[in-house]
Length: 492
Image 1 (cartoon, rainbow, N blue to C red):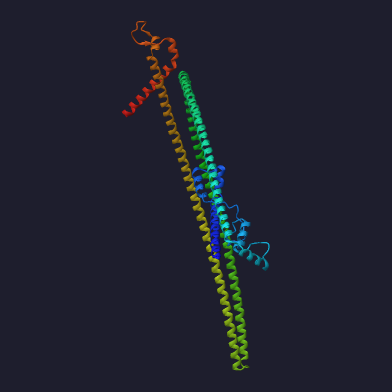
Image 2: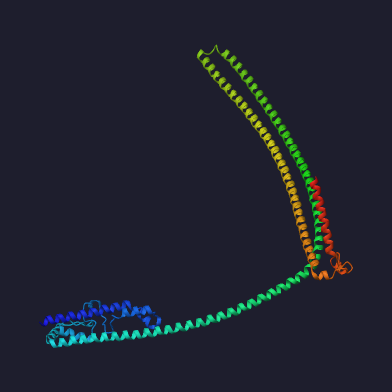
């Protein structure tokens, strides 16, 4: 019975301590890097609620005993060391002393002490363990309440700070809107002042325009006269350049023709020198051939004389020699004569081949010289053609440039006439507006004060508008001239 109670108590203690280990592990893995930061003020509303839910099952582990890996199977490691030692003594479990081991006598004392424990003592141990669990649960509840208070205070501080920030933003927005309104008013006033200045400047420009128009017209007339003079000078310069280019081209052609004649003359001299050299070489070859032929004839005469002498000698010795000796001698002489004849033929053949090779080389040289002369003639002709083509293109470019300059000047004159016509129209419009104005009409005299008849300017106004009248008269003359020219063209 005692053994069964011991086993039940041991199982209960092992189960309780195992649950404390699991809670400690879950707390260390879930709340080590989260809850501490939330308590310090870096939490939000949603995350604080989640942390409270996660930490509701956490139990303190301040009384855990650090053990070696070999002691992990002991269920009493998380208890107080003194209570664990007493409980091991009562249960008959071995003690853990890292520094020393038990001998046989201490083991016997330990077993006797375990046998002396009573069931009442086991109940006290159980109650002690239950009280310890209740205290741990109460500490956990107090810790949760404290955490909630801390989180609430942090959230209230954040809400107050946010309200203060929103108030500052509203004040800044109002101040910005006020400054923006003042800036807009200033811009409107500046724009009005700018418009007034522009109107005043336009009025001043309108007053100055009449004075500048006269000076501008005189300057344009002077510039037109200067441009006409420059154009005539430019055309004269182009004509002189064209004449100079033509003269230079003729001189260049004459110079090239002279150079070509000199080259041809030098080529003819070289040909004569080569022909004389060839004739000399040919005569020298003929002389050498005659000399060789004379030497051959002399050798043949000597050989014939030797043969005749030998035959005579043979005829004299025929009576004294036998037939076999004579035949042998004759055969040897015949072989020697045949050998000499072949040598002479080979020598003559070599002379003929050398002569043919010399003639072939000479003919080849003559043909190469002819081809070189023809190539020089063709290159000269091509060069002359290229020069003629370049001259033609240059003249074409010059004429095109002259045409473009003429067209540009015509366009410029046309634009100038249009500008003058526009200016005249503008002046005429101003005059018409002035004539229609009431102030101008008041200054006129109507037919000696009768008020009837054409309106007449006074002398000061006539003097003031004298240039305008001259421009109008010039415009009328120009219009009449253009009309007459158009009529003549249509009649033609």
